[in-house]
Image (cartoon, rainbow, N blue to C red):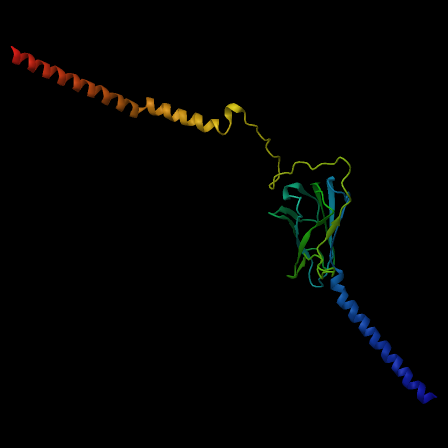
Length: 246
């Protein structure tokens, strides 16, 4: 009996060791995938105004801390609609053509990077995707920009914000210019200054200038000279005729 139970014990112990190694390997493989970017809103509703979004970038580098985070804004949110509400100490906000970046002194290794922005108004959509690229002080770059395809979960998913339906009566406000600031009010053309009337007035003014300008004076002077020459020739011919008769 004892000779039979000992191999069983060794087998069980070996199986336990193998199982532990498999579990450890699985956790090691799952570790980097677990790190990602999360986004939340204080008012996660379509067409909501003055909404604060919170982004949390989970640290995944063992050799460096965050130094820069770049976010691509989804359609319906312009860079001019966004302002920085909170960021790591010493970090600065800069708008880009398609979103914004925040960057600054290195955050301690292993510490998550959290920042908040205020959005003038959320678009009328069911969800918003904020593609994010993170840079670490050791040169590591994480790109959380992938979207699910064919039902499969991407390895580096982009942060997604789910929105509730817009409140009854909510409407989209005028969007701010991409460079920020207030848009200039639109002007309405009247009949007297319509696009068709303005060229005609300009043509008429140019015609008037031609008639009263140097070219007009030259033409008028030439006509007077021709009349004078014609009158002189007629007078000379008449005199010769009279002299011959006499």
